[in-house]
Image 1 (cartoon, rainbow, N blue to C red):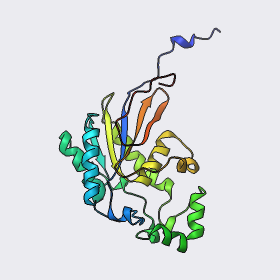
Image 2 (image 1 turned 90 degrees about the vertical axis):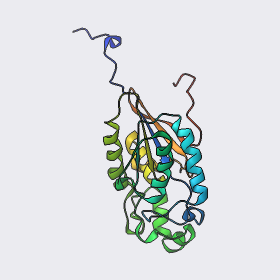
Image 3 (image 1 turned 60 degrees about the vertical axis):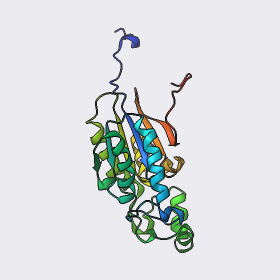
Image 4 (image 1 turned 120 degrees about the vertical axis):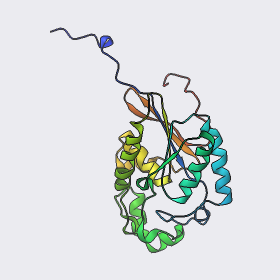
Length: 224
């Protein structure tokens, strides 16, 4: 039996959709290095300024839909983009930040002092219920499916903006890229009001931009 010429096979289905995962603006607890988790903290005035600036940039991407966590810091951030684009924001509590139980409200120094072994195990990539809260895999399991369901509503070439939290964004990216959970820490944190971009290619999702504060630029070279 002769094998078919690989060049004659149809290309995989590509919809060329894009996901922009946008972290909320600055809060007072960010400045104090307090673990926010699912605590509902509003933006500072500087955080609102960050959201307005970032929204002006992201509006240029002509997003087709905006999906956001229902906590105030993400809702306020998403509202700035909605005001410029005329899009309605879909809020979903599944996009909230990791619930971290007893860690929430504590500063970084207090967490290390009171829960040093637990903190060290988490940093080693071990599955840890920080403060008795959620595992990172559980966060990904609740957040990633919401993103995927909303993606299915987009036309080919469409862009979905997801306004969420640093930890939730990192775990969602890891899950969508098919990375092992122990490697998710390799994805560095997001600065306030910065974003990451996933693009849909022939073999699935690719990380195109990470912790960006400017619009994506074309990749000119052998890996485009």
